[in-house]
Image 1 (cartoon, rainbow, N blue to C red):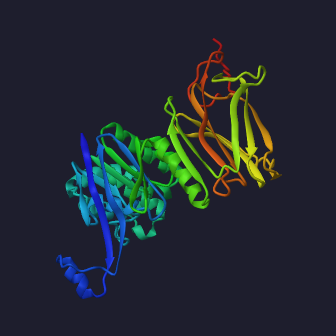
Image 2 (cartoon, rainbow, N blue to C red; image 1 turned 30 degrees about the vertical axis):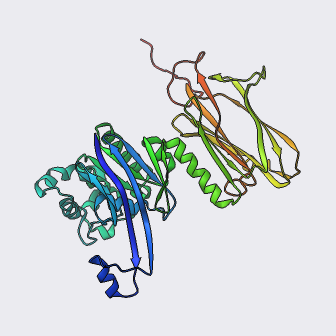
Image 3 (cartoon, rainbow, N blue to C red; image 1 turned 90 degrees about the vertical axis):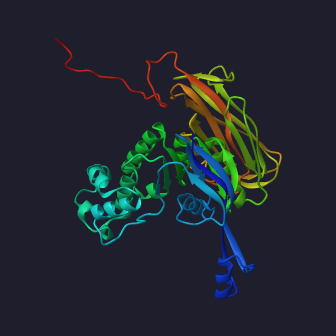
Amino acid sequence: MILLSVSHLSKRYANYASSLERFAGWFGAPVTPTEEFWPVKDISFSLSAGEALGLIGQNGAGKSTLLKLITGTVRPTQGAAHVFGRVSAILELGLGFNPEFTGRQNAYHAGGLMGLSQTRLGELMPGIEDFAEIGEFFDQPVRTYSSGMQARLAFALATAERPDVLIVDEVLSVGDSYFQHKSFDRIRSFKAAGTSIILVTHSLGDVRALCDRVILLDKGHVLKDGRPDEVVDYYNALIAAKENEKLTVEQLREKDGWAFTRSGTFQVRASALELLDAESREPVKVAQVGQSLVLRLMAKAEADVSRLVLGFMLRDRTGHVVWGSNTWHTQQLLQNIKAGREIEFQLPFTCALGQGSYSFSLSLASSDTHLENNYEWQDNALVFDVINATQPVFIGTSALDARFIINGAGA
């Protein structure tokens, strides 16, 4: 069931030579503006019940304008957005709040603007106060609130009743970790109940964890639309490409479903990457919990480079980072590498992972970040599975070295 349909949505802001020409343009006169800017241009997509969509992109990409067009706070120049059901949106911190009103008064006022009756708001008020957890400040003026307290009140009000479509734009980023966790739990429960979610955030981990689909915007256009791992990895490569003019980006999806993204200037290339058993040195595709392993990389310099740093990142199937580090942080920086030189890197480790599928990504760069001289970056360069054949049953991605100790269990 489609709850949101966006068709060829565009917004134009224009400057005219005079106020008279601007006024004439409002009534359809053929007036040419002196300059125009399109923050959103020809965007189309639909959203089904229970589907979560992430909108990502750099500042100025058009994310906030698109949300304002969808919610009707800004009129489109072209196209249309249709919402089939009740929409609840948190677009800007404190939007709709009067700083002189108390939190309770603002909840009644802003809730009325959302279409809720005063009677219904009275019924919901205990739940709003309880979820916001701002204590006595609920009856204090909002001008005395911190940004985090405003975020708590705004989210508690917007989600007091489960909407058909919930739109959240960066507001949760100002809250503390506890409230972010609490808020995402509510978002997940709404999603499971059939609410469609649009999430705008710079936290790509949240996008991977919550969203079924991601749209990458750039200068008002859809640059990429697809599965979270594929679009997020492409976005990371794109950011690096903007910092490195000669960077190449390529992407494909492997047969096992992992998205492989490769970028770099390739002044240094990864010629071989393999996971080996530490004792037999045989390749490993399926590792066991507790097994001693070695991740081995061969790299070749195609040109002279002044510095070389190798980094590895381990992620689980959902894209969460399990571990990551590089030779910059371990103070093993290599310098003055000549063209033609081959270097072997080894990373011995014990497989302290839970059952599941994992991937290693690699980075060859000149510093602690691949945004500076990205020689080669490979997302999901090596994929392997982990099984538990010898340890007691446990859940999760980490095999803790933990044992229960029980005292006082005697008769």
